[in-house]
Image (tube, rainbow, N blue to C red; front, side, top):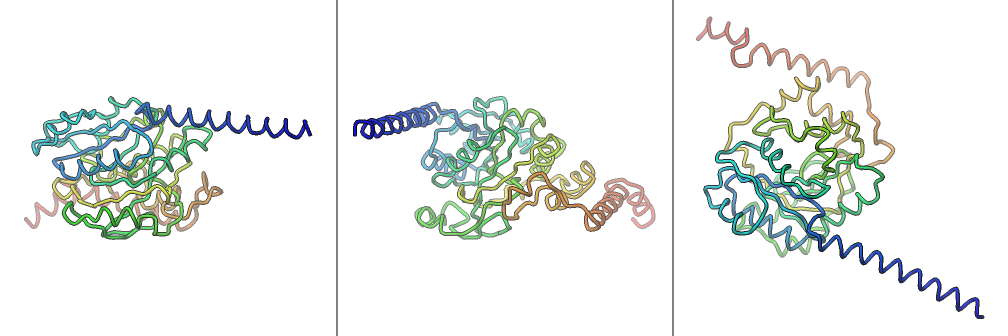
Length: 330
């Protein structure tokens, strides 16, 4: 009888100790404001930026460092950021995503860098799901993404549901009630923001490649660099969800030819890279990590891509065919 009571008390004591240690750990994490460094490039998009940051402050399980790069900021963004006491970098003109991301890296104070667009609204427990996944991993060679709910476009890794595409039409209360009602599985090939990487791995690949400025196809290029340096665990988490307004600020800028830049740099199209090496959008299967599928279809894709590259180089700007056309017909 004595032995039984003793064992029960010992078991209870161990349970309480474990609970207390876990509680201490969670309290320390929540109080230090240093779990993720959330980097947000913005360009005169103040209303959406305010909503984005408010959602981080209201709906995050942990506290995080927020860093904003203000391109221009003449719409009041720079003044608002200063008053709000948010860490920031600033350029007088719009320097694009790539330079902005690398500038914000100089302000990072945590181990994890999370890229978020200024027109995204994070939903409850989005960050806890990401961190829980990180805690399961044995090293820092990972690349994780949250899952986006979007009003207009859908892919294998996003959810199509319209809760508004402007501040005026945004149905916030309805979204908060329904956002987990949509079924989707964890998916392969984290590429699109919001995505998170360890800062040591960010530094290993040199951040974002500035030749893609202002930023078209800089995301798949960053993924390819991670893959080249040994990152294989690329996973999109269905339970970590955000709402993306799809404001498409890129319509206000002169775009770089990112698709062709990727092809010339990596010897294949970004589509081929995603399908063959990262399986982007496919249901997550751990046995596929680190594998890639080659064969006749892959070889044909490479040949087709290289023919595109040759034609592009011959016709781009003042290439030989362009000069001939202009001299003969213009």
